[in-house]
Length: 144
Image (tube, rainbow, N blue to C red; front, side, top):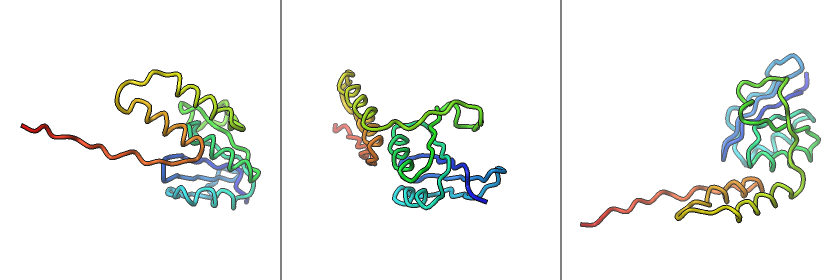
């Protein structure tokens, strides 16, 4: 039987994938898929419905998966666990709309001293499909 529904748990570098057929039987279970291999794996699947948590990186992945004929549904985080078939689903943002809105939102907000805007920059980069590592935390010792 063919895979009809795929759920993807998005993260920064390692993703989890679970695909089921029309009877709910698990046909694809991959608890650990590297970022570089996710697109290749999903492109090899027959067109199906893919569900993901709506986060900054989900819009990028939704655009990529839709190019291969998949129907992508983004879910609000409060609905992700447990999944319920009756929940409202959204579609991936098309084009540059979300990216433009995010850039304006980032510039408008007041940033406190330090790394206040670093998290927002990483979120906008994730929406564009870019993955960045967080800088290491450096602690300075007081000299006496």
